[in-house]
Picture 1: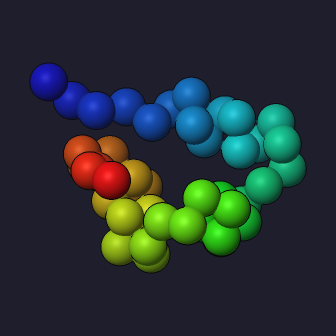
Picture 2 (picture 1 turned 90 degrees about the vertical axis):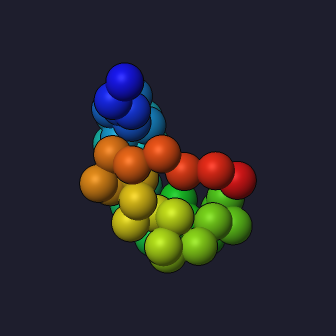
Length: 44
């Protein structure tokens, strides 16, 4: 089953945030953010 983060990206647009701001606010690593961008599963 494919993983979709579409709602996350829509939420970022609505809040005028970019991926860097998301990373800083959530404390995730750049590798995890890259995996999110590719649609891969990410475990925290």
